[in-house]
Image 1 (cartoon, one colour):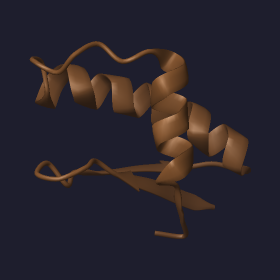
Image 2 (tube, rainbow, N blue to C red):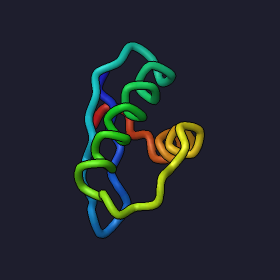
Image 3 (spheres, rainbow, N blue to C red):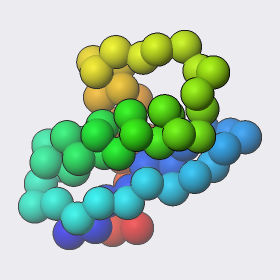
Image 4 (cartoon, one colour):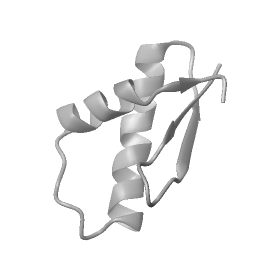
Amino acid sequence: MKYSFTCPAPCNAKLKVDANSDDEAIRKLVVAGMAHAAEAHPDMDDISDAEMRKMMKAGLEIGS
């Protein structure tokens, strides 16, 4: 199944993963989100894994 997360404005980048469950999707999106933040938002304050997981879970989009 396809899952995605859209980075908050003004970025609006869409991170996409394939996963078999919501939990797997969130794990994959956390990894992708950390990489995206390091590349696209190098000046952003550090965010913990737990904070990133909470953000991904709140914005999880299924089938997009």
